Amino acid sequence: MKIAMMARNPDLYSHKRLKEAAEARGHEFHIVNTLRCYMNIVSKRPEMYHNGEKLEGFDAVIPRIGTSVTFYGLAVLRQFEMMGVYPLNESVAIGRSRDKLRSMQLLARDGVGLPVTTFAHDPKQTAEVLELAGGAPVVIKLLEGTQGIGVVLADTDRSATSVIEAFRGAKVNILLQEFIKEAGGKDIRVIVVGGKAIAAMERTGAKGEFRSNLHRGGSAKVVKLTPAERATAVKAAKTMGLNVCGVDMLRSENGPVVMEVNSSPGLEGVEKATGLDVAGKIIEYIEKSAKPNATRTKGKG
Ligand code: ADP
Image (cartoon, rainbow, N blue to C red; front, side):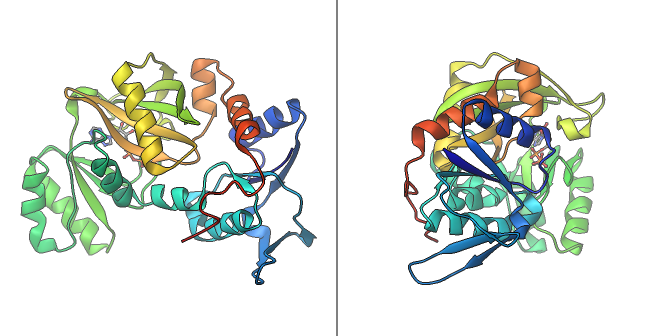
């Protein structure tokens, strides 16, 4: 097969591993820099170019779109879809997952366990949304945040109100969430590929830190999932419409609750913690699924 991977940095662990896994299985693998792609939007003849070269004959595309280039990255991916190239994750599904609030709404509709989450636009409703979230301690999250930046724990209603006002003053969108204290600064990342939970790790935050992000100094180890955790991860992936994703969950006293579904999960932490060949499983999934024009949405919407 001829596979393209949209990625800006070919040297990232995840990108090197996907290339290695594809080539080991006899595929032709091209890394295209998302921002160097340009398109010709012609009726019935969608075309794409990369550094002066026309991109042709690809069977599948692996989108690794960084959050800072979501808008242009999704346009490039849509063009691949319209050219009939099979996308590992579809552009609409990635678009959905990039909006934290939209994701929470969809997951809630489908009955996936979530921390109590509230949201309001008007600062006059601060007291009410705080009360709906169960009052302090609460977690306040920037909707546009990643890697734990913009995730704040407020211990009292007073500090929560100040933080909310500060964020509002900076004109950024936030959501409020009940603090899952019993998670104890740990979370679980499950990698779902083709509707199966294929690998899982538990991340523990650095000492005194409630956020377990590896980028914030957390550490990871392999974890055995309960049937409920496995089912929750698979259901979250299905709701989002993502073939490959990382589902982040907390172990709450009421069972697993989902915090986020990531459409381009990093592979380094999970492969090192579990010793599993996650990149190989992803390529295997592409082999089974990629048929020309297999995009259900054909780049719609
Ligand atoms: P980001 O997308 O920026 O990583 P997250 O929503 O995943 O933000 O939050 C970062 C970390 O903070 C999580 O990995 C988790 O350890 C912790 N955390 C987030 N929300 C809660 C919550 N409601 N209760 C307890 N801990 C939380």
